[in-house]
Length: 357
Ligand code: BGC
Image (cartoon, rainbow, N blue to C red; front, side, top):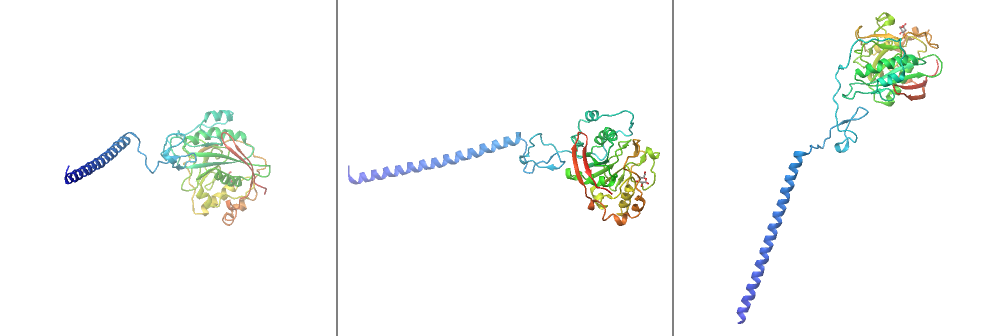
């Protein structure tokens, strides 16, 4: 073979190899991009299908109502125990109310019976409605000493009423330790303070242990003004004994209570402390709200006067000076010692040493 034809052949051979290589490269690049585009299409279709079948998950998760009544967001959007459920607010007037009630104290009642009739009341006397979010968190404060029989009737009648009123409530019995003279208003201040240590209450109902409402429309909650609830007591012929009467059962929001510096601590023995509270309310520019005489009917359990709760002879003088004394005597000057806290099925009992006169 001549030398120049062998050179030509070698050149042709190399050119062919280069073309084949380029073709291979071209095909590889084409295949690579084709496969990639298929991947993307597949992922898109899969994603679309997921959106059709699975529930939407938002980055802002629905709040869950926890035991303290607060709306919380659970990480991951799931409640560990139950499915996420947000409660609607309870209505302004509970649909469960029945109106006038028959209240009698002839037949004895037992704590076991009350417990079995109120299965939804939690330890310590706590309750909140299951189906709606209560409008108010109410601490019921009962000043107490040696009145267990009365307390049973109170629990027997009040637990069903308070549940029908759709309140988020707790019952606190503030038991005065020892046998020095009774001090109702100071025990009420203690109840306010101790209840707030346990839960974020926004309303306080202060009730004598022997007073039972005769109509469940008399809601044990707070209003825009301090409320007097026991307006027509059988003891007074179902009418107010005098216009300024604020004794028996009353309710104040936390804000109203603080506005009057709580209650006086220095009324030892029976009488006057409720008049002092009335003076405080009025002197802070508030008025007393009341239910109608019909709705506000209530019965008092008859009893003999307690020992160590004789009428306080200083009360007339004290109620004449509420305006001067209320700024330094009240929740800002309260001092006491908690002796015992007991969580019973139907109430929390806090025994306290409130000192002596
Ligand atoms: C007392 C009050 C008492 C009212 C009704 C008044 O004289 O000061 O404390 O609630 O009588 O018994």
